[in-house]
Length: 506
Image (cartoon, rainbow, N blue to C red; front, side):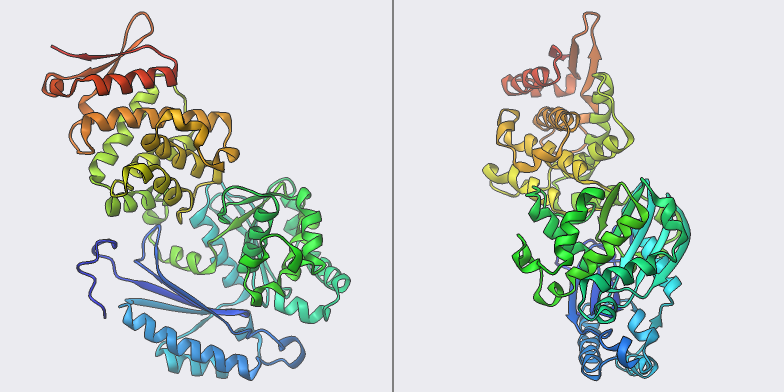
């Protein structure tokens, strides 16, 4: 085991856990920092083995694919040992459970890995996929679908309730072989299989949550096609009816001509048409309002299932933001105090917030100081990039924009709002305004605290009879009064549209 005592980029008192996912298309190892609500990846490696190829015709996994998978498992066991993994879970899905030579493969895999391999039933695979959605989203309403190489798992969901589920033999490898490369035949197979899922009709106007690597790569292509400014697939949303022409184009195997195809591995490109066909037929059968893509699936759902109920109820966005604050800010306690102070400031100024906007503001406070080590000219850009492209869950893209822009303004100034990146395009006027308000409050607060705790809580707001506001410093902070804070207070006043005075109490 490699010693990590001097590694400040990792959190203390966490033991790595790992999941090996033996899928029909790929075999993957993911090592996580620890078993927590918002686990961070320490290591991630995938080998495209294609275990599911040929099962529809021969009933067995291809011997070469089995050989490659076992070699990958040998390496993954070594990597897990090297990383000091405390707990390793090995999950096998459709190919291993359906192939005639599946039991022999599992027996050899267990010998190599020196532990049991859990062969998931279709129902278990669907359940863990649903847990993955629960771990990564709020206000869930619709159907989740996890598309692998061998099968498609569908589950109806509403908030924390997991409803009926179905497993269909239309994974991308299975469908390609059943259709023998014929587009129209693949469409008819997918359409017929989906008719057996009664709860799809109850999904009209709701959400479809798309899980799986093939669908995430479709999201990448759609992002490129739309010139969408934020290249993050998690919680990327497509208007379901409007996406059908795009899916039809991909389904007819025109992928090599698509913008952004260079970002998709060559081994994955041949399967994209079948992923597009299945998604298009799902949209026709279910008629959802939106397709929402998820980076969380069976692996994340399995880890989520191991947590206690209290830990499951934690806010994944807040947990991840708190961890990043601990790792990168000058004072995590100051970040927490800033969240409390800005909440009181918003209330004092009558700036209303939805529940999600409150969460985004508090996360922004925890992340407000993560780029302090960068050169001053680049702190805004660094904060913007870390936040906008961070591995956060339980947050949509406008929420990412809110947090990223607030911290951009905190470093680069409110007058530079016209220079903000293309991310402005995905925000509403309401989110844009609140990100500027929050950035302005940040710029005031940091001049009094120097990012140190125990200060900002004593800087209070007081309303005057004429509708103006006072920012009040107690006597112990009187020395902090000066022209620079006055300038920032005046800037805040212009931003929020209220007259503000800076005063020191007697």
